[in-house]
Length: 74
Ligand SMILES: [Zn+2]
Image (cartoon, rainbow, N blue to C red):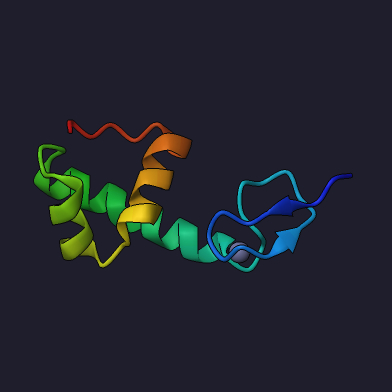
């Protein structure tokens, strides 16, 4: 099995996930935060605003949206 590089921390790991097992709980936490935010405020905010409000980095926000098909009107 080929090693993959973690999208979040850059370490190499062996798994079918998009991120390593260290980062998985952090991702899940932030995705939950993002979903809560969208539920509460709707999806009409820009990524910048969401990033500031949730503390999630823009890079990670983009990744969650691409990976999870989260619907945000940009
Ligand atoms: Zn990682």
